[in-house]
Image: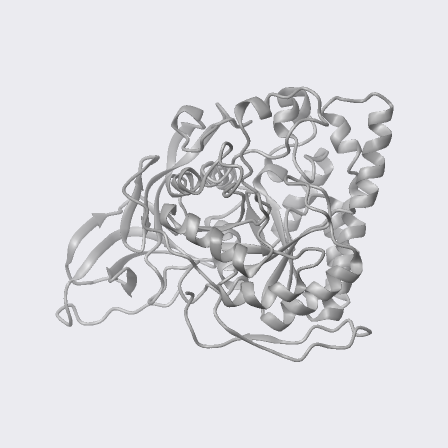
Amino acid sequence: MDSHAGPAAAGPPFDLVVRGGAVVSHDRDVRTDLGIRDGRVAAVGGGLGGGLREIDATGLVVLPGLVDVHVHLREPGMTRKEDFASGTRAAAAGGVTTVVDMPNTLPPVETAAGFAEKLALVAPKAHVDFGLYGMLGKTNADEIAGMAAAGAMGLKLFMGQTTGDNPCPDDGAIFTGLRAAAAAGLVVGVHAENDALLRRLSAELRAAGRTDPRAHLEGRPAVVEVEAVTRIVTLAGAAGAQLHIHHLSTAAGLDRVRLLRSLGHRVTVEVLVAHLLLDETAYDRYGNLVKLNPPIRPAGDVAALWRGIAAGDVDIIATDHAPHTAAEQDEQDVWRAHGGFIGVETMLPLLLTEVHRGRLTLPDLVRMCCHTPARTWRLDDRKGHLGVGADADLVLVDPAAPGEIDPGRLHSKHPVTPYAGWPTVGAVRATYLRGELVAKDGQALGAPRGRQLAPAPVTVAPALPATSTAVPAVTATAGSPA
């Protein structure tokens, strides 16, 4: 963490001083003070001058605001499930100050004009800062540069069926889109499942009369993920695109990523809170509420993901916050049930509980939920840390406070969660966005004040021929998110 404290008398007083907290970065935690001016961290260290407002954070942990790079806030077209206002209030209450919203809405975000329309619709409702993904689709490669110019955070490629049932591109369309993404300097995030295989296996199970929750797991075995990961990493390497695998869920998938990395491929990997905390026994306890794409896995896969975190093979933890109505969540036929459930508000309390249990450290949490997401999407001049110059997005946490997940206090439109009643250790006491209080003790406060974020510009090397598997360098240039 960068540290600097100027003379106490120099310049105007700080707008806010946070004193005596344990300030956590991706590699350490230090008991120190933060001086905040004009919405940014202006000084870090002891002996800071006075502030117009001061907070005594003694006994508290001070985290950077979390960056959740995988949420579905359902606007436009599915606001019966969630909308940008309710979803970002939930984020603020949970200590998440930056969200990246997925494009599989109605209509999907696959053109520059559609991106602009969505941005105009959601921006006035945002209670935290946000980025928007565009879609890498079957026929929209020519739109990618325009979406990048409009501030797209990246592109999402759905290789397997999920909410919205958007047609999955064939390999030719994928490769064309990957090259366009590389030229535009956009990260491509991938839902890596082999669509043809999962549809075939699911059809066989349906024909056999299976409608139970475990049929979803059996219709999406590990090979569905492993094949898709192998194919997309290979294609992205040839196209020169920066690749991120969303919600990797299996031991075999993580083994394949390790192998591909050993061959020189660059790829970041994300796992979900749900894939870390639930295993296949959850189908017996919660039924179709825990239907997820990709599915909740056997305990051996869960243990492998935790080992991957300990080994540094997993880069990011996210939520795949995917709301549905209470009626949709109550569907008993697995093939009619909707996949996904809420998570942006419960992520931090659940992960703090794992810190208490010794499975994570606080720097681990900051690395995977703040530092690496911000760096990967080129937001790290402002987000993901509390060094001088960063946005004053901070979360005050009582690390020892007992609690439980209470659906009655959650902010999503339909607060249906498998974690209801789960005990927690560690509570979010306050969330600040650019130095302003946006949530206190689990309640979102104030009017929307979130801003759109876009990646810092890049200098991109020329695309390589299709026969190459090397990845050209992509270097951030000076500049701030939009």
